[in-house]
Amino acid sequence: MNSLALFQEGATQHQLGRIDQAIACYRKALALDPAFPEALHLLGVGLFQQGDRAEAIRLIEQAILLSPTQADFYNNLAEIHASSGDPLKAFFTYRQALLLDQQHPQASQGMQQLRNTHPNLPVFRNLEQLNHGMARHTFPTLALSQDDDLHQPTDQLIQLALKAAKHAKNIDLSVIAKRFDAESAAYIQLWPGEHYKLLAAFVKILQPELIIEIGTATGASALALKKFLPKKGKIVTYDVIPWNQYPGSGLAKDDFDQHLEQRIVDLSNPVLAETQRDDLAKADIVFVDAAKDGLMEHFFCAFFESVKFAAPCPLFVFDDIRMPVMLELWRSIKHPKLDFTSLGHWSGTGLVLWK
Ligand SMILES: C[S@@+](CC[C@H](N)C(=O)[O-])C[C@H]1O[C@@H](n2cnc3c(N)ncnc32)[C@H](O)[C@@H]1O
Image (cartoon, helix red, strand yellow):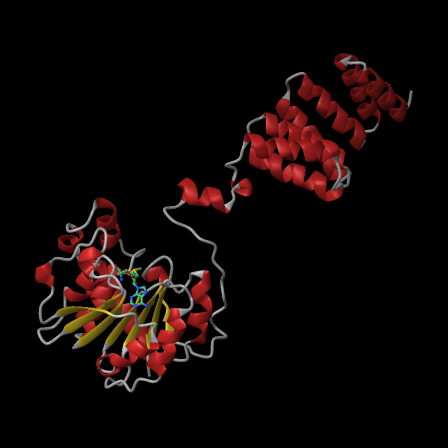
């Protein structure tokens, strides 16, 4: 018998469940024609059925290298990987089968089964799962190239940011953190990842006389900004909710002195914003951390464009600039700016010299 006839005989025996006989025929066929892909493939399948996984994989891989367009070869190899506890290899092997034949029934079924049995495989993870267990917090983000933004950081801004990062590394906010619950306390001390130490560092370096904060909330950032405030310095922090009505506030009555004032003003209301114009104009640092709804920040920026600042270029810090709704705002800022997220808040820290 020639190699083809031996192979066909082997396949017939195989279908009848006579694996030993089938293997013997495939071996004889391969003795006559060692580069017979179909025989290598089915010999591999037969050996796998008999428990010789390693040899089966070796033979089917050899068959694939000789005849790379047969979806069945990939499918059978994928099944071996799936049953050998290597679901990632199984995924990528099924994928090859389906690239060759989109409708391949066994490969489609194998892939579906893999998804059911290994929902945590990185290739099957979805955003829902990222939110539950893989990271503390996630949301979908978009990436924009930065090199083509017309408003690049100046050397002054880069130097300031780097200096602040160096300081941030050594700043201890444990005294402030103690005022909060354990979860918030951990965030306050976290750097990089959260912005509190970076904010304190900017104050340490710039020694501002007036800081404007939009968004007091629990007071964590106001307290961080206050830590290195110079004797003549003052923070005016705006919110629409009074500090003593804010759940989990770390602020106390005594914190409000000549250095810290909270104003309950909705700065997205053009009429009310106007009443604050003269004070805002004296700012050396402005920290924008309000609703981040991608709407009111546009008003804040438009309003600040109309303010004649006393300082030559106050530092603006924008929180959450990588949130999808904030990307457009960040892109639209027409002053020297630097996305400093990796050394600030994970969800986006934007630094601007408001020239
Ligand atoms: C993310 S929190 C601020 C967090 C705080 N800066 C920190 O880092 O600890 C946002 C705050 O902005 C306040 N806010 C929202 N819209 C505002 C507006 N139009 N004017 C002033 N404050 C606003 C909210 O009430 C909320 O307390």
